Image 1 (cartoon, protein in one colour):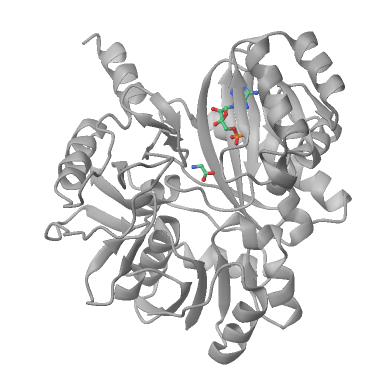
Image 2 (cartoon, protein in one colour; image 1 turned 90 degrees about the vertical axis):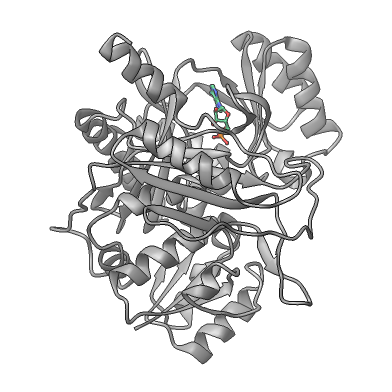
Length: 429
Ligand code: AMP
Ligand code: GLY
């Protein structure tokens, strides 16, 4: 069986690893892939934004399924183009991907479907946005409606900050088209979890919840990033909470998408804020999260290939279930010097020897003209350790991440700290 994976980050490396583990005879082709994925299959030099190029590659390779990793090609309609050419695709259509690519669409859909989320006002002019911000009061959240590579959300503690954010988006065009429409949103207090579900549009297979760490530095300080680490499981995510999220978040959202003529199939990611009034949606993404995927897939004991193929082929998910290990996983991201602002690229890398229960997923790596492994992206590796306790997994993940040789590398040493504090509290430590 041949699979085509579109993307070249840690998420796609983790997907390629798990899918090959599920079926060792599988042949993986990745576009563009990365040197980590190249150890599991072949990489084709086609960019994720080249829809005709990916369709042409699929026509040459004839994969049984195409898995689209990142949001941008989904938002641009890559799955529609591949389906029109006759391929089975894991990933939503362009219209369904609006659940991520247009925050104002997602918010209106949630409102209609009665899905719990923060109140928000959609604005396209400075005056009405300022008025809405004043009405909500601080802290207030200003969100670019379009895709902004994780940088389009500003949590503003003062009205002056909110006004600056509004001006930057609507007056100065600093966020480009993504910020020409924005949401002024009520701030929600609470802890956030990432809950993924594989879905055929009707049946929902929830995965293990994870918690992302978006800030650059230990203690959740420093600038926001694409994610510096993640862990799973999260004890806050009880079976009851997941059941409740399936009933009150996933099912009504999928129903509303069907009713809007945009049925969703693929991976639906809910960012949930656990507020005193229950779980509320912070955002939806239309694809696997990064780095959460690198944390949860090593804990998945049952096949990922089977449900993904069933969704891609339109065979439905009813009767399928996922089985999880009882162990803990911690993923520590190794980022390049200067990340997230001025990333230094091209530095050589030396990796430590392989170890059992440690996965070094490549996120931003390449090979230079002399055949050496070099850093090519802001997040360079996602190092996942699996162990029987969270503390042990964190220690192993940090130890291996520290031993990656890359000049100026940055990493957090405290991934999972909230969970560790909770368990210390529970045992009275
Ligand atoms: P998003 O891209 O919508 O997930 O937003 C990025 C981050 O901003 C989230 O992970 C939250 O930590 C924070 N955030 C977004 N919306 C809110 C909100 N309404 N209240 C509090 N924090 C928020
Ligand atoms: N970890 C956040 C994201 O994938 O968007």
